[in-house]
Length: 221
Image 1 (cartoon, rainbow, N blue to C red):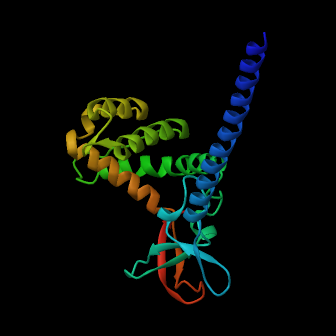
Image 2: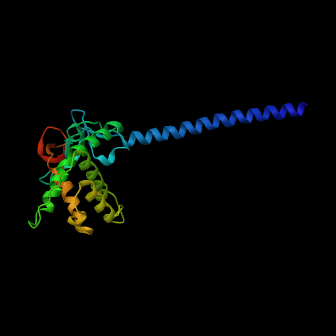
């Protein structure tokens, strides 16, 4: 009986020691992670206390610096104010970011269809008129965006022939009016770019002091 009690006490003591050790190990690991995050988010600051750096220095979904490194249209490297680059939403708010992108896509969809129609009519042989409502334009825009944005080993993930048929069906045009293969890809890429270009804004680019302007950066509004 006494032996059992001693064993029970030893087991209880061992469990307590293990629990305490585990606590210290977890605490150490968490402190190391916190220190690592602190290092990642430690941007340089200028004389006015504004942080500056590149988007690559930000942790996943972490906040960008006050001044974000960009290349001006004149080729000079400088910094643009974060709030001017991203406007609304803040960079660390996933919900707002999703809503912002949704509004941006909705805004660009009708210009995309217009530019697509213009490019298809550019050779002058056939005038292609696409009479699509906002819903159809948005669906076509989303498919075109996904097709030209996501690739693996340098090739689009989505099947170009399927995308071609889907877009023709959604917009109510003859699929034969759309080119095939790489030419089709380039057509969508160009139309998407022209649609975005309709809403480009010029953002001032400064030195790290945030005051001396050295150029402008063009970004989609």
